[in-house]
Image (tube, rainbow over all chains, first blue to last red; front, side, top):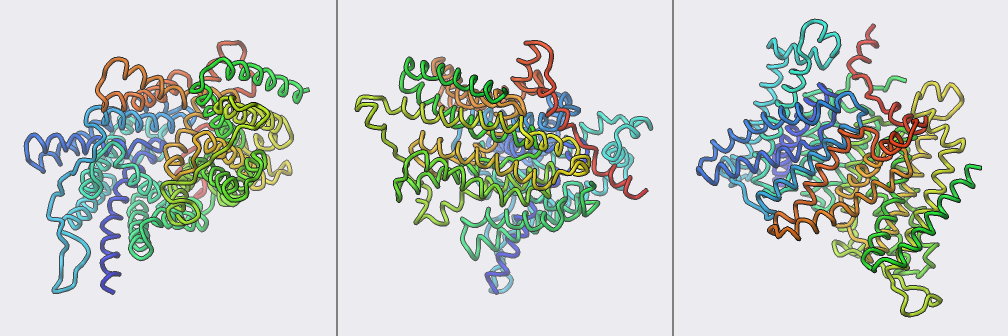
Length: 292
Length: 348
């Protein structure tokens, strides 16, 4: 029972990280119909930026803010420079460009910072919390992680639902030509979508890195599971991203805890295949069947 | 007629490769063997994506299956090499059939996600069953040069011969498959599933068949790669390899078998070349070891921006009028309309 509680809470905390990555993928997918394979690489890079800032100033929160800001800028710059030309090309071209970006970012990070594992500080204490004598399996930092992602997701939802920019973002994603006819600057909305995705990815990067160390490939495994979470959730739906992330977090946590760490990825695959066999377009897809 | 042309081209290739392997030093022979192993795998993938219209980011997993089957058969049963390679391809084909059944239900990014996870998850079996599969160390794959070549015959040249022969046979088979009823059915399914099934084609069956084909090619490629590297280990079949296959297929020119050769050449030679340049300019180790990675990334981006139809597409454009076969795969993979539009139609 004790173990079960620990694995559950730990899984939920980690699931929020997957949810954040999934959320950033969904933001881009909805707007541009592009799967951004460089999302993990972008998050790794912005975390390195935060690392430098923390090294120089000794201020964690300054580094945290810099990471988010650089994620925003990086997303916007990449969309304007290399993504825009492939937006109306065959989808595989965009896939390769984002893979190229991933490889490039990892190479550049390796050139600047080297390949050694660097430890990245957590925001809060990582010692396990207890209620009475019962260890919960999570720390204050885990609570902050889950809370930060939740707040970010809610802010995004509010932005989409209640603001004029959000309306324009949704309109561009729903039907670009009609939105353009109605005076929405669709190009800017796409850039904004990428910028927001960069920000959410950067948030995931700073939050998860204390547990994984920081090195050029540090986000690869997280990205794969985040991508899986997005696919489970249905790629269209922000709510689905969070649900997919939490589901994946729980399953991998139970599998790793009860059955050993070598089975984690296999169970991730199993969940994904099960969900897709029942709903080929994910849990929260608009339509359950594909239209033939 | 087409069969004769394909065999003729392959024979020409064989002669060129024979001369190259005899003239070049052992290290180059080794690299040629490596390229040939990748060609087998990339060719299967390029036909899968380009002709049947399905995406797989997980073909590294099928390569791993081929590699481990090769290692186990050589280690325990000492089968002859041809039988071992065939068994490696067959085992991967069976796995491809299983994945294909699931894949036939999935489209675009969902299929990409599922195969991506497969590529990550499968190598962890080596750790789980470390008794049979050797864990992280992997299994040794040792072959000997046949006695009739003499004791002084360089083993790397023999490796290059085996791999090139296997790759050329794969290319001939795939070229003929593309021109056969099956190839036409794949392209029909790719271009319009509804029209294809109205014409009497079994869409799901054709898609599963395409997956089996691509998995068999990947299995053979994996068997060859394990033989070249003399080891089958989980570290050789990472996500990086799977992504490398995909990038090779696409920057080579999607759907084009010659393109799979360009892609494989880039995959093998670009990193080595960039590394050499970086080292010879006296850059520090952390920089020179990362320069090839960064350059590979830049090349991927630039090729896609400058030659959207890949290298072979660019060559075809240079050489004259575009043949229908060159453009068809790319037209077919046009961006699908957002699902939200489908939904809107559904509501009406």
